[in-house]
Image: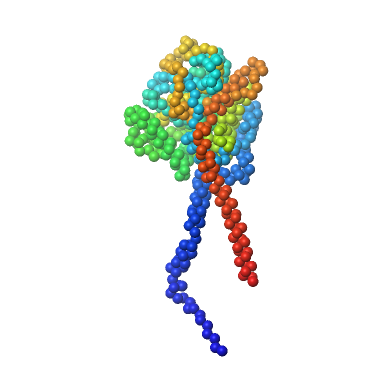
Amino acid sequence: MDSCFFTPEIGTSSSSDPRYAYKLLLRALSLIPVWHYALGFVFFLVVWLYHFLEFHFLEDVFGRFRGSLVKLTYNPDSHVYHGVVSKCRILHGRYLATPWLSSPNIQTCFLNFFGRPPVFNYRRQLFRASDGGTIALDWLLSSDVSGSTLHKSDGVCKDDATPIAVVIPGLTSDSSSASDCFYNAGWTEDIRVVINYLHHEYPKAPLFAIGTSIGANILVKYLGEDGGKTPIAGAVAVCSPWDLLIGDRFISRRLLQKFYDRALTIGLQGYAQLHEPRYSRLANWEGIKKSRSIRDFDNFATCLVGKFETVDTYYRHCSSAPYVGNVSVPLLCISALDDPVCTREAIPWDECRANKHIVLATTQHGGHLAFFEGLTASGLWWVRATNEFLGVLCSSSYMHKQSSGLQSSLGSSIDQGPYVNITEDGMVAAVSSEPSANDFGEETSELEKTYQKRNKEILPEMDLDADNQKEVNSIGLSSILEGSQPPTNNQDVKSFNLIASIRRCLNHLSQQNRRSMWLLAYIAVITSWPLLCSVLRISFRKKQRKALSAGAALRKM
């Protein structure tokens, strides 16, 4: 019997045409349900956002939400560490960010947009500078925080020994200033004048200083310039930029940092708009309006008014890192390694380690001035750390004591004329006391006559609206601690007053607006996508392995 076999021709036009393969591929792709494509798109979008926004939610999950240890950098012979920081439980613990804010960028944005401080009644005291500028001291007493009216008055007793905490904020401004001498990142004369004035007015009261962001840079630079001659007893610098030149390179490096750069530039341009007549006369107004970055603004404004040759010259001149070695005051520096504004590359690790008066505390996460903690993000970790450090320092024998008389302007950068960035209104002095008399209007000694040029003006108690409150408090929070044990002797009275005052005010000022909690569910869903996708991927892999095993078994048969 004859058999006939049909063999298809190899190399026909239909099978050899490359377009035929693409047609088959497109036909196969068209058979895949649309929702599979949507799921894949969402998956890749979430992965991209997870890395772009620097989320660390999975890291926290795998770490069982224990947080990361706080790294302390200090000199082995540091009396500040062994006598003060070694007794601080918070600084020797762990920091865990709020789970639904597990991103330095989300934390920083959340602080700026939703971190509204409560409203307080401040007693504003204005210094009118000889050049026409204004320095504002907003006094916040313990009675203002607690709401007590039993011993409420309009002033502070000159002999009051209650510690005073001066908060130096970052970028802030006030449209009422009319000076050609503008505040900037390296201008330390204003804080020097305020500290010396407070020390003269209240010689028995220990002075503490807290600087945040640019305010921290100014504080460290001031402490380094004055050395042991400053009357400051202790200080805390939070999220300092340290080296402005490195910070400038960092903020223009990545796309995300450029968003911060642009946002800050818009804020500076808005500030400059309030002072257009003076900027038009002293700087390049057209250049200011066209500025696309902080560096552009400094080039067209800061350098021209401050007489700096270049922007880099200005940044080098006003950085605080070169002054770290000369700090002679117990200083706690707090920085987050994932700070999206002030890079870890600028932290002077070796200089801090070489100085016996400095302890550097760094956390893996925290963002810029955020450090939210707790499920509801109702507290800030750096606030608690500051509370504890100042409380222990005040009860110890390691508070700094001024080595000589009041320090006048040194032969440093502050003597070389006005610098530019913003005006100086917004400085906060927080005092914990229950005063019995108003001494602001008293005639003072010959030393105070040196301040008559500033024409001290004391305003009555005033209610600041929410916008002004945010301007004063959003960049730096004045703190007052709350003690758990009453003082047992006269020696403990000073430390108890500081502990009872700084913690209470800080706790109040760090409360967040409850209306923002509606974001909890939304952000929780967004941050849980990576974990859900990981579970789905594992499940798909198991099914794929089973299918491959079944296929292999069929082939063997």
